[in-house]
Image (cartoon, rainbow, N blue to C red; front, side):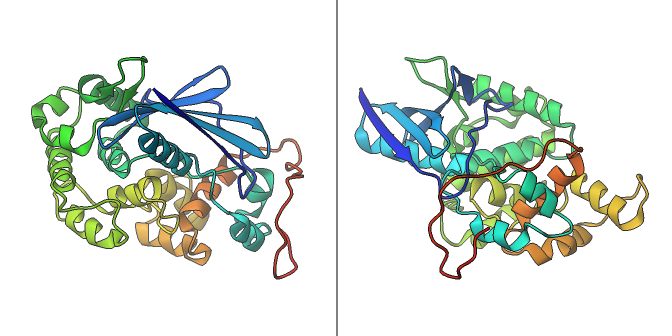
Length: 309
């Protein structure tokens, strides 16, 4: 057993969320987030703690040091601990639409998946259904196809190869609609065979191949981009929450629905952070009067322009 520990000083104020995920894969216990990941088939358990505001600790346990290092790298990506959001906050902290939400919660991050295929698979399960039902489908898929670590009670999301070898009927038995079950298996085969490389620098090429699969549309690919590939310039404009929010903002009617193009138009001025701006737009809608914005004392590196957020 190899144990590797890495301490990270966040580049922007960071707060470790004290909970796991609705799919039951990540677990929160005793002040730590624990997650099983697989690196080329090798299981690695990564534990994340935040003992101080300025420090986040990652501890990985696995059979080999290189697998532990990659496991930590993937969880750093998933938590967003290395994201430098100072340019975004400095530019938009007084924005009339999202500025108040930025000042109130500078810790907000886009929650990501350690593996891009996870984001793709879960986006397919979340298409056009109630969110709690989607989470139940995900838990069933993990229970039936997920990978386990013998030394823990943790489970990992099935990889593309495992889903590619599953019969669509098995996914249907998890309550996934027939068309989406076929789409998920076909997408998994594209990834497992290497025809779609979700880690390639040219993301758009893989997106085009995925969009050729029936039942996979722009919203699914944008969810993959934002939550699986770190593309904060992408926003899932077809999300019902955005359609309702922008529709109400444009018309004043609680029953109005905007188009996807109208959502993209509203968030276009926030490029290249449209996805993050969308998260703050949702936060601004949910926010109620409360305590004043958080005062931050984290030291910052000098700004060449002589300004600070």
